[in-house]
Length: 188
Image (cartoon, rainbow, N blue to C red):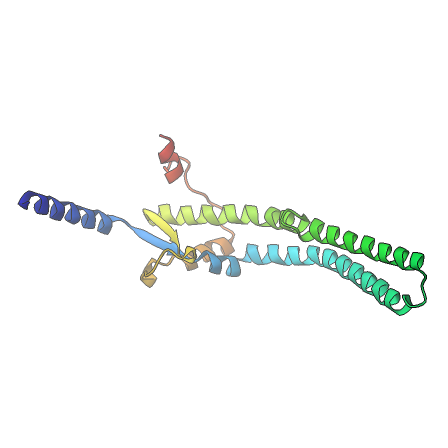
């Protein structure tokens, strides 16, 4: 029994020593996505481009509303065939509006595709900058505090400002390809 307790204490001591030797940092990716100049420019471009899509959909909605209002005003004087024709036109217009909304703003619509096109190179650059800072400052691990898994961290571990500064400075240096990364270590 004494050997088990001694072994447990020894293992805990080694674990604490290893944990203390780990050099950690964290970033706030949400803040980076708000404050980085490239992200703001991508948002401006996306908003400008998507305004045309919203305008087209609003025009279709107004046409549909006008058709419904006209039908409501005339339905008492329309015969059965006239009602069916008007209802059919309204239904066709409504379906066209729904298709257009799906085309532009659906899960795989034009807006989602364009947003991904604009953000992908920026996200790659953010990851490169984080990796560069981690290598430069000899961090063993960098965590994203917005993921919700960090319950407490001291302010000096926050490298978010450093990442934003480097992104906004236009610095494009990436890590030395000779330097090992977690993904290349796993492949060995």
